[in-house]
Picture 1 (cartoon, rainbow, N blue to C red):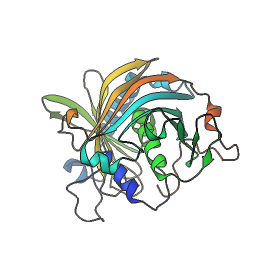
Picture 2: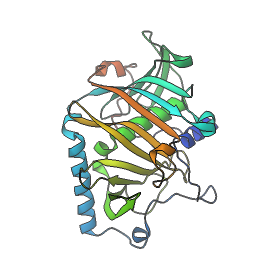
Picture 3: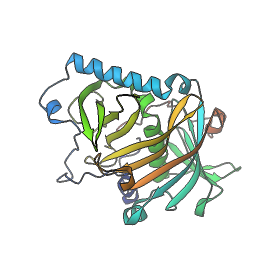
Amino acid sequence: MAEQKGKSWKRLAAASALGLVCLTAVGMGCRADLRPDALRAIERPSQGDEARGRALMARAAEVHGAEAFRAHASYTMVIRDEWRGLMGAMMNPWPDGVVDAKLSYRTNSFDARAEFLSGSKKGRVWGMQSWKTYEGKVGDRPTFEDNPDARFILPAIQYLTELVFRDHDAQVMTALEPVEIRGRTYDRVFMTWDSLEPTDDHDQYVFYLDPKTGRVEMVEYTVRDIMSMATGVMQFEGYQDFGGVLIPTRQSVTISTGDTSDAWVHRIEVLSVSWDDPGVEAFEVDDGLPSLGDEKLAGR
């Protein structure tokens, strides 16, 4: 995600709360690398593996409802976002340990707003336009002020929710060998940008796909803008059809793919989804800001 290079402790804490930890890394200079040994031994994937990986992800996008999703300009999710245990209490980027919120996103961008429905910020809004954050009361004109926590958490939730629709421009996409975890077999696809080798500029992702349904069941990922060794796993469950788009209503962050979702560190429950609500004008708080679309800021 995009932000200035400065990283506050609160943002590092938020990353850990999302499960973005690499327990095997040694030293701050270490880059987490999700490539299996077979990929580390080659300079580029074979054309066959690349074609199979792109076919698997194209099928996943279709199954998840890419055509219906791309017909909309915005959407709103009502969620409950919760951190568990000591890590959650220490690392949460939200103002409270359990947050009920209405998250609204503009598609093909990272413009977003969150209306707090409970807790200490009830009746207030966090938002972001062209990576500039703002705050205010519901119904009032908000004020632009720097909020690193909002700039991190709002696009983080959006990106992981939409990832199956946003991966089409990845230069590196290759099928990996299927793997069995807790008695279930998954197809896998490795994805990144520019180079197969890990870089500071681009994250790596490994998708775990159900071979029968084509749905994304888990995603393992790095988060370079938080910490070069940061990794996490998001497990998707409880898929529901919202207007032709499959949305996982339970999104659980665990430390590893071997963990069950009951071992979650951070969990998001999606309670409802509505489309083209609010209209795009709700995201244009400052008419003078240039639209960045789905671009990230330079240096991220």
